[in-house]
Image 1 (spheres, rainbow, N blue to C red):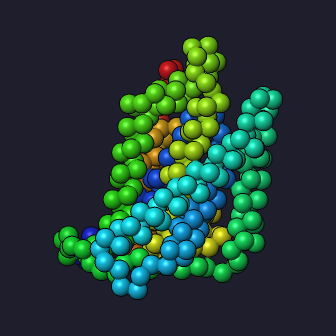
Image 2: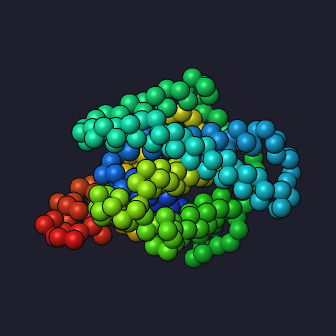
Image 3: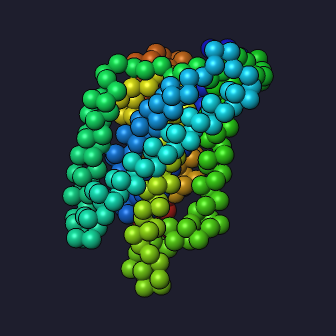
Length: 307
């Protein structure tokens, strides 16, 4: 593999890693406030892809759109993916998880419910949209924007990375600089004390789910702009993003970003060096290797360390 090929693979890895990072934040936010592994999040991601397809199919993008029209189409797809993803996440929390919290159900029941919700959404999408992939309506000509070290960066790659950076920065700002973020951090630290101090636990949890759903929905739309949209699209990216959250330190937002980028790059180089059949082997090998020496992840607290 030449140096120029290495740069090509690195760019592909960073694009893929950006998507993993955005999805991983949804997992890590919910785990932070509920200690819950929300495996239905991969289907929220899938729903975002279909949201974008539906919105763009309704407006019927022009055959040769101008730059302004293309920007409107992309923003429309992002908004549609975010709205559908956020709505489904809100519904899941309201209908599935909140009743369990009020009954103080065991963690195993939460996990089984999450898996059941995932299968329900998966099969519902298959019934509603069919079993075959759907191409995202063309929003722009996917030409090269600029070249870095001989590597061509396309419009789609630029949109994915740019949108991911904006979302990651927005989440970091929300978590660390807003009232909602203070509530999220308080509930994650100690729900009982947070409740005694006047924090509305239900509201914080619900908004956390919505925030994660917005991110997952947008990621689903962005994923669909590069590939096709289908009801099975959430499983492998969802599992890999969950692995990224664990790798970075589950419950740590910046850890999720680091884990996502790292696994994206490792996956891209694995495919280039070996073959597509080995796509997920390298990424999960890195996960196992890191957890052997640091069980709490790269940015997680060491085992036994007190808060």
